[in-house]
Length: 512
Image 1 (cartoon, helix red, strand yellow):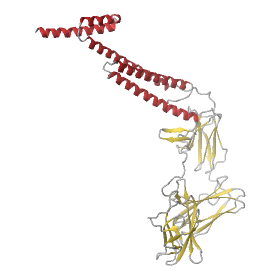
Image 2 (cartoon, one colour):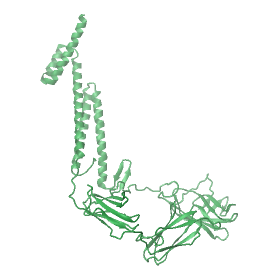
Image 3 (cartoon, rainbow, N blue to C red):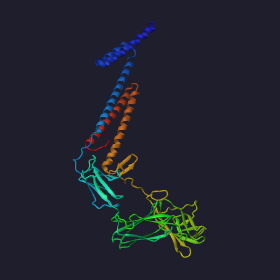
Image 4 (cartoon, helix red, strand yellow):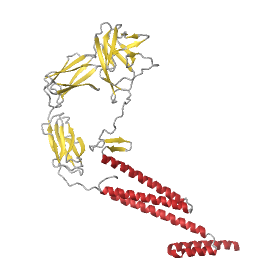
């Protein structure tokens, strides 16, 4: 009974001393040292443990108070930063100017915003009356000038069009709402002439243009309906008649011819809506099935997989010539060079695996060594005995990736060649977003990324410092090290925040 009372008395003394010590710390700080000495001299057990726990409690309280103040400061700063805007230049009544009438379908309309503020973005809308949705939306920056030049607008059809221009505050320029009427398609006096029908696969079509204006340039394009562009030629008119290269029909289908005066953009009078022909197959005219005329292959291949002609006479002998970066006859090497190919029973000749030096039917165990060089190639079918040309086809090897097959680039392409956000400034599309090529926006983007990284690093350092303090177990060195990390992180954040605020006040936006 006496032992139990002694232990209870000891516990009550420790609790009483802890309460007194806590009161001393909170109310009578000057008496604390004397109180601790009294505890030590009186031999009260546990005072050292009491002191350590109270010290750790004080440290944790200070850390949480510091974090609370930092979070409150961040909330106040960023709520204020969102409302800070750079001072706007004095308002100027911008005006919209476009090409004067008459307006026609396919004609270009130049657009300029004048009397504008410098270094300001302006946006122009074009709406076709009765349609509702804009048919043209462009944004341009004036830079150091007091005007902004926009890309030309080309009406796709006749009717009424309304133009509107706005400043960054979406205030309309003085003459916004300008409305024009676009008439029907205007045409040039030229007339397109092509070989008369019938048109068959392999047929060679002669192309010319009469009633041309001397000194002007003219263009002819041919598109296979439902397919791609096969022919694109331009010629200057030295007389009233312009002759263009002939066109060989590659396959069955419909082909649309289009013309234009390069200077005005107007088509010839007989091709306002294009000129379409249909091509079939003649049982008497040889033609190339593959490669079809105008085929494009991406650079990077060493073997032309297949050349095939049809409508040749079964059992007769023929030869093939190739012209381009390498010129000569196609042959098969079977101990000697065999330049003669015999048509099969269906009137076809197929040649496989052709190297850039003309060798065909190359064994896959010994592939072609060199790749086909970039350029234009022509393959001609000739009679074996008299070399009469019966048919021809062509193909191009390109390095821009626009052809068939796998594209193996030969040189680096500048990725910074597009306006990705419509502000009239060329951007670079990267994994961290669109970065402008102009020095100001580029530096702004780099600083924006740097601010984000710095904030994240500071937060990580604060967390690490807090963990060191919490796991210090009263060790003064660990507590001091953790406290120093937290103080350094807070100081860095304060420096960063005030730097951003100062830059925003002087007009350089880093954080959006």
